[in-house]
Image (tube, rainbow, N blue to C red; front, top):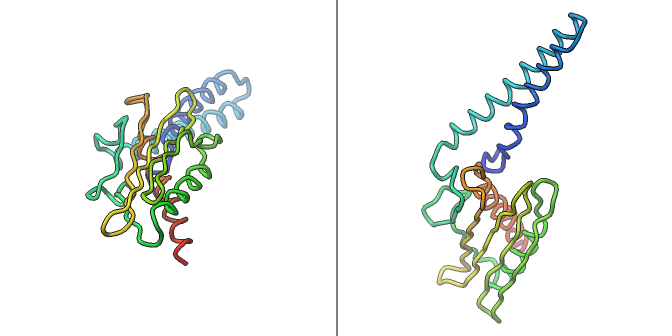
Length: 187
């Protein structure tokens, strides 16, 4: 399981749900119903708290709370700069556009808002990622290098600390989808 793709915001939603169930248990008149609600509230709140704290401990780095994440050759594998040898730069750019358009966040599709393409040298795509309150931005630079076609990705969120690792998830999600599409090209 790729921990970068888990939306930690969902765990934050479990905590208020546990509180709501606890309040409903207080409103119940029959003892058996109140006990069932209380157990559900404790379970829901505990699962949310454990998953959130566990997720933050696993990802306990300053980069988790960063509002901007950028790939690099020295980064951990999900966030590492990609170099593809399977196809020319413009084919990788086209696959990047298709990979981005196939992604969804919060049941809303990602939208490619800008495509800058050169005749044979790749280019850049900018993707708008819809959120609940704000939109995040992902930019992929695709260019030919000596070893192959290099793909560098940057994701930004205007939310700052409230992003809770969303830019990391977006980069990892995009690169995983691009990896799969480029692998299919090479077959």
